[in-house]
Amino acid sequence: MKTEVNASSSDTVKPDSLQAWLLAVRPRTLSASATPVLVACAYAFACHSFRIVPAVLCFVFAILAQIASNLANDYFDYKSGSDSTETRIGPARAVASGWISPSRMRAALVGVVAVACLFGLGLVFYGGWQMIVVGVACVVALLAYSAGPFPASRHGLGDVFVLLFYGYVPVFFTFYLVSGYAAEQVFSFSSPTAFKVFLLASAVAFPSVNILVLNNFRDYYNDKAEGKRTTVVVFGRRFALGFYLVNGLIALLCVVMFFQPWSEYSFSLLVFLGYLFAHVGTLRGIARTAKGPALNRYLGQTSRNLMIFAVFICGTLIVYA
Image (cartoon, rainbow, N blue to C red; front, side, top):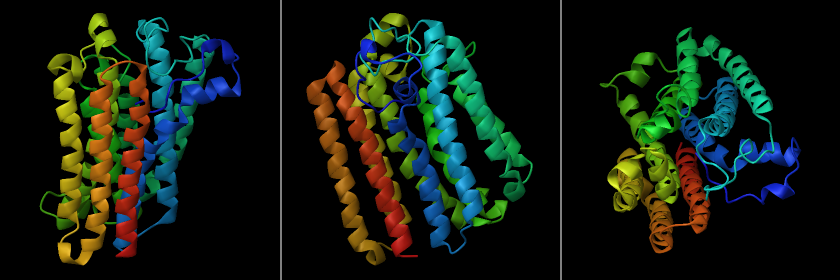
């Protein structure tokens, strides 16, 4: 997922420079991977069952996985010929722009994945061998998003991937590892705790999807010309605006359901309305702008709204713990 504004033109970025690698890593996108981990940790803290070491391991793994995903998108989109510099209206890509060679990008991708796996192995001590399966699934997902014979991003599955791997998977497993709760308490449909975690995961997942929705809304015409079947290409740009609105409303509804009884959190629920105003304000800006590079600014706003929402959730959980 991409949230930063356009980089400087390619002739101002030196090949293999620190600037080139920072643009490839896309630091502003990292909030999307940090948010679910922070929310899950805050809930574990509110449950008076917080373990710092697995929290740090989950956070580092999530950040490294996001970096690897960004590098993979850069490399595999170059290999497939999509997002070329001639037609691209989003942030410039490092390999396509000539800032980083394909071989160096591939080596960096392998290295980041390897380091992420090393940190992930530390979680086996807290969650058992099953964490290896979860880690492998995360790595396969970040590669399958833009690579392989059936790239998810090109076949309308990108939204599902974001929903799962920027919402449900990190929130559920981070809470499980950090809280030390039994698996039956966290993953059983009959467990009240599991339902609470589900609500938190949904509150994070749906606003995260909006980052991708807006990205695909901006790239609609290019994606359609390239045969890239995103949900926006399949269902249309008007659908995308409604989808964007509904995702934010679902997130707010999940928070309202989570913080019951409402009388105990009345002030905090009023604060959450600030997110709703920011969400609707961003959507209005998107609708007015309609198309072109100017939409990039709203990617930053969408990411900002997600982070504000997560801060409100974490703050309320910690204050009322």
